[in-house]
Image 1 (tube, rainbow over the protein chains, first blue to last red):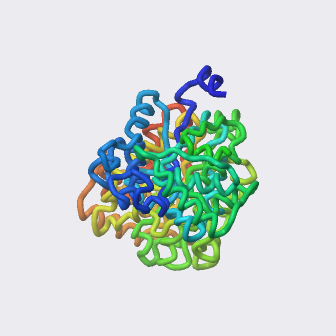
Image 2: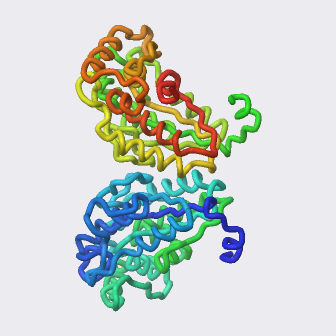
Image 3: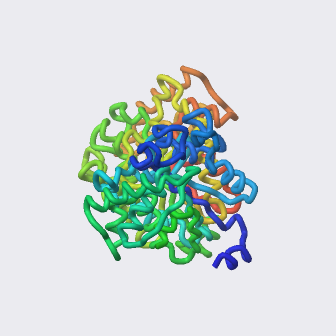
Length: 240
Length: 240
């Protein structure tokens, strides 16, 4: 599949779709370093969007970075998009603050903490928005490169995969993956409302983030274009 | 041009782009009947968007209508789009309230009354958003059908055209076109800051609505696709 995409690749045919949003999970201390502090991680999706679409951070004065000062990978992504001439758009997958650049608005708000409550009260709205966007792009751009900016997203991915009986450890932005904190959240979340083996929609609704139903909806309605999942262990949860 | 579009027409190639937004002009009593009351005309762009994208009104319980009960033409448009299979998207050209369906957000707010103040404080932001959207769609969809929902928009069109030295009367949603009220606004607006013959950007910034710089930006960045201006005397102001 990868070979086929690269052989016939014309950058003008492709579109990079950034699904960007927050989850309350990223406020949990020690869970992510996609931001200099827990509170700043809530802004990272909007600032990543500003970098990808507008070329620079706007709602804050510097790019999102880890507490150690390593800046967001959105900068590298932006450089690649500009060098290759691939067009890009951003989608609201639950911004806590909207970016100061144009984006596809879905009306979604940040996902809730799956250890406490149902994570996605607007699961259906997100899935429907994904269906609509996929239908809009289908056959017009190919590949459709689905990417994400969701701080805390490797944790929600791990909860979703675990709840479906898939024993995995997801990756992390942190130098030492906070495996134990993640495991605690997985245990608490699944303790709240149980396993959903063979039912990915229920698992995502209870434990996921809004990137997931958007990506699922897009994947479902796209028939003619190739989709390229570009998001490591977070996107593998969608693919799975 | 029209013949050429129809000869090779495949509805899957086209996209209908609704530029929807408000202007304070529509609050002036007697200026528009794109809504049952002056205040309700401020909601019409969002409700038209809901009808086109979602198939029904959502933020209010019935379709926008004139005081006499004639419903919005968005219903006929929606029927045509569904029957033909043409895809559609909506763009925020200054919603007073956002619609409850997905749309392309530009961060714009309703235009101000050109008789009182500069109508478009965010002219540049709107033009840039239009450039970006045109670049995103160019060569992927053709024709790009530019449509609008801007209550009060025939009045802003008349002010813009008049200020450029073009002596015209625009059309109206009202049974008897409120020519005298429009003329009064034209006089007051141009009295405020003068004519802009040969300078359409200044004219639109001072006297227009946000549909105009968006459509201008899209028209400027689209190189490979055909653009179809679908909005009567309001769009003719853009074309001019």
